[in-house]
Image (cartoon, rainbow, N blue to C red; front, side):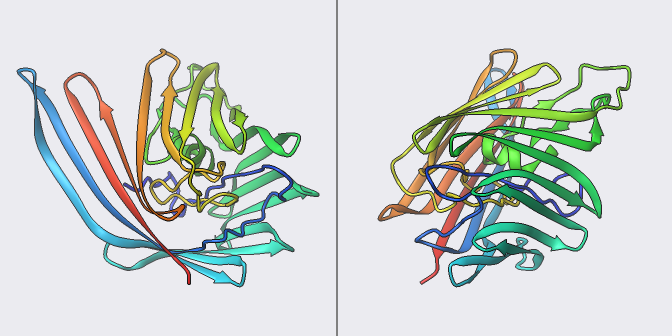
Length: 308
């Protein structure tokens, strides 16, 4: 299911850095041309120790994305709603082979800065205003830490903030497929300091094996397992929220993502794939949230077509 942020046109960012490849270079040998989605949402309650379904909502298979390539570089992505209408189109600009800017229009865009091969910073603008700033630290050629500041979100906010809606970049990395982490400030005095997140990444080979997030004294850790097949998003510096594309921080495809919250409760999201050779042509994902008496389950299938 799609997760839309608190602004109208959501722009997010995902990063990959490994080996000697330049950050910002995205040139897969198999290029996505179209992405389709089929979703099911089930709402149920527990009655006399039996789960009873209250509502089932099915969204038929439909195209959600169309990718346009200019030679080896991705030029644009058009995003569609369930009725086949274009919701928005995101275009990409490059400095040589490195992604320099991604934009939906003049007021909604991200810009990236580099030091040679390595990305060092990024800024996200929404509605013509600065929404978030990013600073990247590398260990060798790999990104080891991401520090994020949100000038428009302060630590004194008392409402729960959907982490997937705080920033699509970060949470696409941590928990793809609509998994959400509620972050609530411990400060009740109305602090006006910008909300800040620190993300520490642990690598195993060319895959991120763990990501630890710290904010306002709260710690969340997500660990990952992978298969041995090719991830078509590897190296993709930009990730607009589409409801669960694979993390671009990995060479391979995620099989499980296990989130451990501050109360030590662990929750695992599992993924299944269908392949044509080493490249996925379909991916399934299911996620359930709720409590001891009510739950909502989302299941999504993504289908991939590749350019000839």
